[in-house]
Image (cartoon, rainbow, N blue to C red; front, top):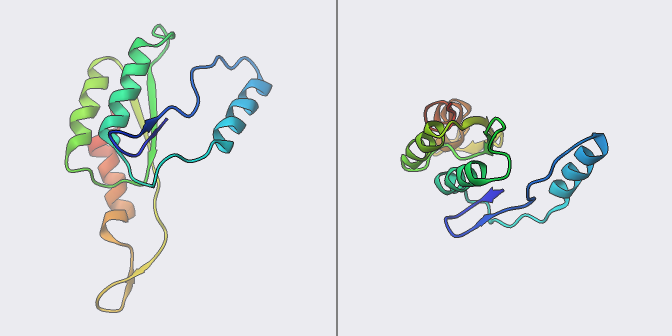
Length: 134
C-alpha cells in the first residue's frame, strides 16, 4: 500500500497466499514494477488506519497481524501516535523501517549538514515514539 495523502491511499498488491519461492518472487516483482502513485508525500495516519482495517477485516484474521511501515517521514504534526494506538489495541504489531536521507544540504552558515527533518536521530526517534508498537 502507498499512503501519500488522505485521499491517495493506493493498494499496490492485494492479498495473496505465497506458497513457494516462485510465488514470493512473482509477488516481489509485481510490487517492484508497479508505478509509483504518489508525489512523495506521506500520510502516516491514514496509512495506519487503512492497513489496520485491511488486517482486522481481511481474510487472514487468525494470523499474526503485522504492519511494516517504511517511510522517510520524521514528523506528522503528532497524528501518527494516535493512529498507532488503535491498531495496537486491536492486537496489530507495527514495525518501522525509517528511511534515512543521506543527501547533505548547505546551511545558512555554509557548513554542510543534514536537514533537521531528515536527521538519522530525528527519524529513528520519531519511529520509536510514534510509529512502532505492539
